[in-house]
Length: 173
Image (cartoon, rainbow, N blue to C red; front, top):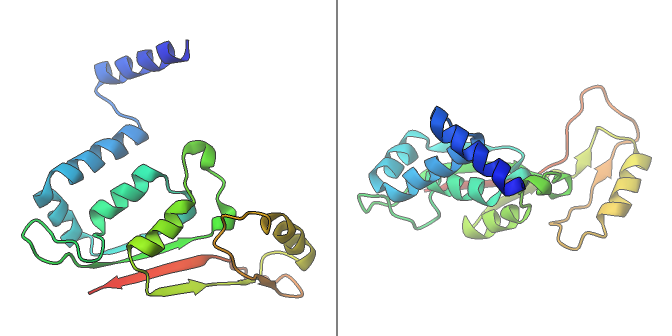
């Protein structure tokens, strides 16, 4: 029954000439993947890229990102070395969208594939009291797949709060 409902949805989208977000991502990825000159154009246009909440990206979104931000050593359509800078921010302990396809492993893949030279871990938390963090960390420490950090907390909440993220930064030459 679910397959029939989805097929009806697809048929209606086709009749109306509309796409949903997932289809938009897929179609734009396919355009960039299949057209080297278009890909080179957008890589040149968007030379500095910031990705926030990186832990919530799925496989397609990560592949899409790589269409804009070439991997080290990759060449553009003219055979020249692709350039640009990418800055990704994420916290593997805050990945909550696996049910929508988010893949926290993209963070480790990013670090490896982009040969990250500067990894900054922000390990001080100003948002929560120590007993809350201690309880959360006691649960989280059992996750064998996490990137890990040793989070500190302040003795009292402060009015200006920041969040604790692992920050990945890459500057390509």
